[in-house]
Amino acid sequence: MHRMMTTFAILCALILALAAGGSFATPTDYFRVTVIVDMTTDPVSREQAEAVLALANEKMIALTGFGLQLHDFVEDYSGGSIASIAENYMQRASSLPNGILIFSVGDDDRARINRAYARQIPAPDGFRNTFVSPYLGDGHMYIAILQFNYLYAACGYAGTDTIQSPVSSGGECPGGDGQVCAAWEGLQVCPVALPVLEGHTPVDLASGVVIHEFMHGFGAKGAGNHYTSAACHETMGWKPDHFVLDEAEYYNDFCPNVYDIFRDSYRP
Image (cartoon, rainbow, N blue to C red):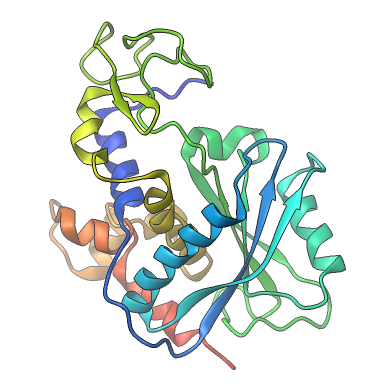
């Protein structure tokens, strides 16, 4: 699957991924998360999953006053769809979380292509989510699908998951083919992306993405909830050309008002 990205697309992906950190405080309560690893497409260890959630927790507390807490960790070998993986877990779990994070390439390679995406599906009868989206009610499960082993700004892969060449080809990188790929965390990346990626790891890159995808359940505008969208600019009263990199990173490339909606959604 090709991962050809424009300079702007690479920047947006990295903004979303690099939004980790923030001050730590005692949370009001926790948004409890079950991690399910699709072992057939994106194997992730419990230690890696816990590290991702730990960073996301700190960021989430700074943004909303609520933390993220690991509720359960499950390895899934079924090879099923995202819906079937989530539904099978919900049917057999003795207690349910507020959300489910599934490490997987997703249905139809959607997370492999786009890094991550979100879904919200009806939970079993009798379940009441304590975080109540004004657009969904209290009977839904929030799901974030994320490929942990994602190839950021892939260079020299020729549309595959393994290195094929030391130089870019097939329009992989902005600036044309034949560029010498840069090394990062055992991977090859487009040279333009290296200055942004240096000093980061796959763990902290994933942490902001987790928050971003869970927030989609609390916004009504889909892609219009993104920081860079025209809808967000209108909601926030920003000028059309408003863009502050540090601000975009802090909010995980998401419109700031949605964090207020999430905070107000808590119904213990």
